[in-house]
Amino acid sequence: MAAQGLASYFQEPLCIFDLTSPSKRDALVEMVDAICTQHRIKDRDIILEMLLNRESLGSTAIAQGVAFPHGRTLAVRDLSLVFARSPAGVDFDAMDKEPTHLFFLIIAPPQDKDNLYLQVLGQIVNLIKDDAVRERFLAAKDYAELRNVLEQVTA
Amino acid sequence: MTETKDQAKLLVALQDLDHMIKEVQDAKTAAELKDMGFQMDNVGELKNARDKITAQIRPQLLNRYERVSGSYERTVVPVVNELCTGCFAKVPTSFRYEKHAVMTCESCGRILYFI
Image 1 (cartoon, rainbow over the protein chains, first blue to last red):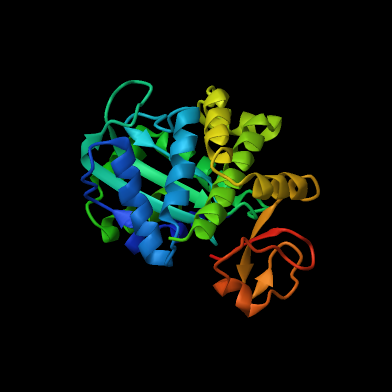
Image 2 (tube, each protein chain N blue to C red):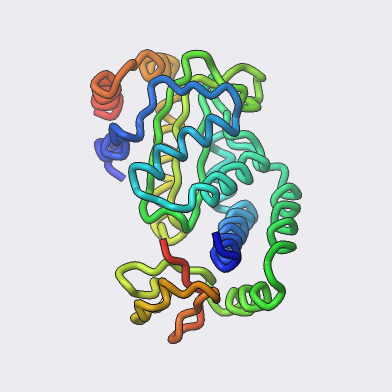
């Protein structure tokens, strides 16, 4: 996947800059609701259950203050990415026990044969390893600022 | 919501879970995810979740799911533009409004999911 392609997965209606839920489940609900509204998906519960099952396998809060809930479900037609910021933080069962402030939720249909979702996931994980990049994502307060960050870090 | 719709949703959830278990057990994918830093140690939790789902599915439907999954990688497939996305055969429009059964493709036998 071309580096510049990554920014195209960040759609404005799927970017939440003030995630309010303090708990893991409610934070996932808030993000999944954004996808269901945007893509007119009727079976929210299926997506939520898949994500909670994935979390039961091991928390996806792997980096400092960052989580990557992800998985495949038949309930979506295309790869969807939700970006979310939680200024207050969410208890997401992170390995370091610290609250999670940044989320990149990625869902793909099972027929994603090129494993695009793993490519997108891997690319974001790599970006976020850089402390300065992570701080810039955390500081983005609206979609214009986020696009600016994306353009610079994927250039 | 009708029982039929619930059963269809349970079959989708079951397939999602089976895909996840398969992904964890696939050495290449699991290595890729572990390299990214993801922990995937609690496979037993997924198997427990699977047991909970299968306990809610009617035995006849579960048998159908297990039988079809022996033939195809994807047992439940979405219907897009009135086509079964497993074999691309035309699906009768009336199937979408069927309230009393979980529908299967007349051509390939896969279970149909109306997105």
